Length: 312
Figure (spheres, rainbow, N blue to C red):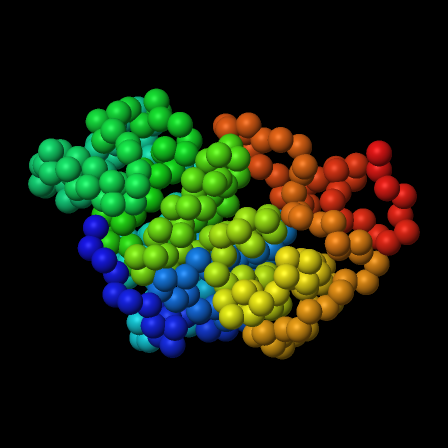
């Protein structure tokens, strides 16, 4: 894998301007602005229904915005399909793997190549092994994909995206199917990718992952981007301050014209000092399915009004 050019903080690879997407009776995204820069892990944080998936679908070419523009390298570019997205260097690894489980890794690499040209499996396997090795990964390209762990399958998808020329790598709820060890390995991999100048967009609803892995955090609420914590501010905030600010943004009153950088604000009526994430505290084994905050039963809620009795 060739080294990406040094990141230029003033030149985002992709910029979304005023992106709006409507469905019958629902505004999924409402005038969202977002800039994706090289060498950063940009976290999109929000509970279920915040609009994260719709935004990523437009970035990946699966949907098109009703209003607004997408700029790639400073030029307005419609992303009409996933193939267009790949052509612009935007690769997406979805929550549920897209590799064919009955094929080998190298056979999955061959999918999508021109049908009239016989794939050179030996060359593909060598390129895969080299790129994986540069990232500190060890995956047999001739292994049947379904025999790999979920973490290894995800790593294979990431390597495939890089081999297809991705400069922007979108990871959609990538930790929801992983063990704690797998989450740590993915976090380390994201840091290595960012160190090579890749722009990583990491979608999550877990505060701890946002703090541990993110350089920049954008918060979505009810389809709107309600705030952003840039790298220089994230480095100076303590975890408690940042938690209070994000809780306020995710569940407090959303401004129709939010500032890109907001001062810390304490959410009314919440004991935010003990909040670590918006998720079920139940352990998740590899192969299980994650659940967003809005799907948690009342007895599992991790944020409760001040004065409410504590659960045993």
